[in-house]
Image (cartoon, rainbow, N blue to C red; front, side, top):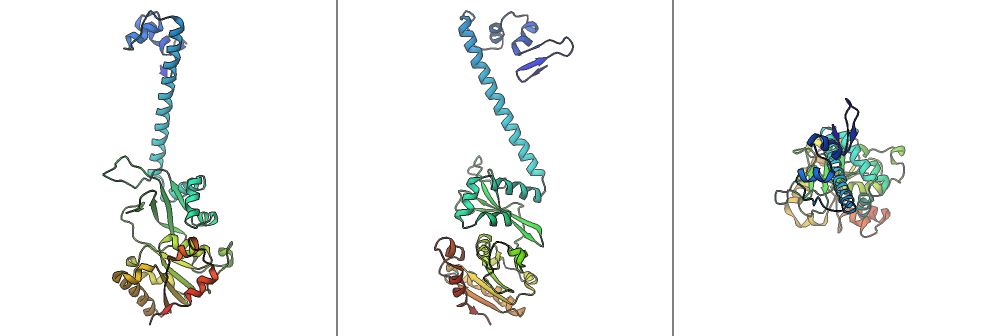
Length: 314
């Protein structure tokens, strides 16, 4: 039977290429006659040299088509595998792709995250985001940078940050996933957990910020930090994660002071901590807390001084 550009009969042991297969089958004597029967526009009176050149060109076209089919098949198989993989396996795959991609590592670096942080939080990268769809651009398949969230060392959420999209740039891997606290497993770090950085906050003190990236940047600089997806996502039942904390510092972005709704959400969260008898302070920053380090070259010591100006909530 034909297989690619070669075939073999296991009955009579004949073998060859497509022309060798069709000539006896169609009772033809030359390769050019085969092409003419198949509908190719071939001049049967061309010279042998021209014919050999034409055969080489056809052979090259056939090879390119085969390569394209094989590539599409591999891509489809990989997409099918990812769709059926467990979420943990997906995170592992995306993380390996991030470490192997200079583009992804450069992105995280520009966001202020060094490679040990990328490894610590198992940050990922996927060249074609599997959960992004734009009905106005159905063929547009952008890359995405992946942030997994763990609680009690169990994966609870996967968020995609869509590359090259300025608005509506976040997608949860599982549609409808509930909001989750980020970095809670590092709220009470041991010396071994800290590993490669120095602790700049007193043990028991936890900073709360909006967003996973801010939490990772501050954590990287030695500040025990938890991230919430947004001030409006705060849930009172999350207080259980803060049992044992001696002090909470809510660090907000500059726009909060000019947004009544955001201020209300922040104050409601602060009052939940007050009700749980956990001292809580609010620190309003003139820059986003991650930008303070990444864009403006701030130091941990200077950031500590800013935190001391935090207002105690009563």
